[in-house]
Length: 313
Ligand SMILES: NC(=O)c1ccc[n+]([C@@H]2O[C@H](COP(=O)([O-])OP(=O)(O)OC[C@H]3O[C@@H](n4cnc5c(N)ncnc54)[C@H](OP(=O)(O)O)[C@@H]3O)[C@@H](O)[C@H]2O)c1
Image: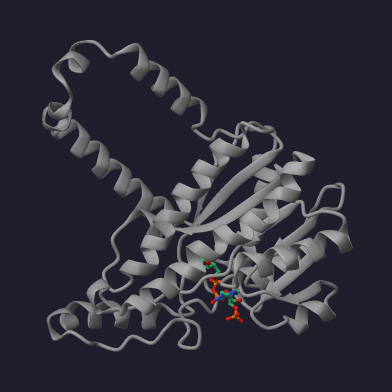
C-alpha cells in the first residue's frame, strides 16, 4: 500500500467492532493517524493495534454523546474526520415491522448518526475545518422488498449528507460533509449475528420476502465488494489523494460495480419519467409561472445550484 506524507489527522469512527469500521481503523492507523475507534462495546482488538478505543452507542442521548466527544477533543486536541459508519439492516416487509423496530432502525442508522455529527460539529465549526463522512448504500437508490426500512435509512443519509454539505460550505470550504454509497461488500453485514433475523409475520408477503431472504442468506460472504479496497477509497476521498487528487470532487461517490449499475438504472428510469411525463409534471404550476419564471424562482434556483454540494479540490 502506498501512502503520501501528510499531517496526521484525528479520526473518530463509529461501529468499529467489525466490517468497514474495523478495516478503516486499521488502515488509518497504518498511515500514522490517530484513531478514536468506537462501538457499543470497547473494540479491544483496535486498542491493541494502537487506537484509542471507546464504547459509544450512537443511540445514546445527545448530552451523553456531547460529553464523550468533548472528552475526545480534550484528549486529542481536535477531531479532523468523523466517519458515521455504525449501522445494521432490519429485514421483512415494511408493514411487518413493529413501530419499535422501525424506530430502532432509524435511530441507529439515521438519528444516531445525525446526533454524533451534532456532537462533533461545534468543534469543527470552531476551527472552520473538518470532514463528516456518511456511509450510504446502493440501497439508497432503489426499492429492495424485505429490506425496505433499511434502504429507506440510506435514502435519508444521502439527503442529509448533501444538505449538510450545502450548509457547511457556506461557513468554510474546509468544512465538508461527504458520503460513499457502497454496493454489496464482504463484511459481516449480512451474517446472521449482525442483521436482525427475518421472521415472517404476514402470510400475504411471504412468497416475496422468503425469496429475498434466501438471496440475502446466499449472498453472505459472497458479495463482490472488497472492504479493504473500500476503506482505501474512503481514505483517498477524505484526503483528496490517489484518484481524487487534483479533481473537482462530488459530495458523494458510489463504490462497487453493482452500485454503478443500480444507481445508473435508477437515474435513467427517473430521466425517462421526467421526459415522458413533462407536460403532466409541469401542469400544476400557476399559469403565470409556466409562461415566465418569476425573479423569486430564478433566485431560488441560483441559491440551490450554489448549494449543490460540489467540493472543490
Ligand atoms: N457491507 C455492505 O455490503 C454494506 C453496503 C452498503 C452500506 N453498508 C453500511 O456500512 C456500514 C458498516 O456496515 P458493515 O458492512 O461494516 O457491517 P458490520 O460488519 O455489521 O458492522 C456494523 C458495525 O456497526 C456497529 N453498530 C451497530 N449498531 C450500533 C450502535 N447502535 N452504536 C454503535 N455501533 C453500532 C456494529 O458494532 P456492535 O454491534 O459491535 O456494536 C458493527 O461494528 C453500515 O452503515 C452499513 O449500512 C454496508
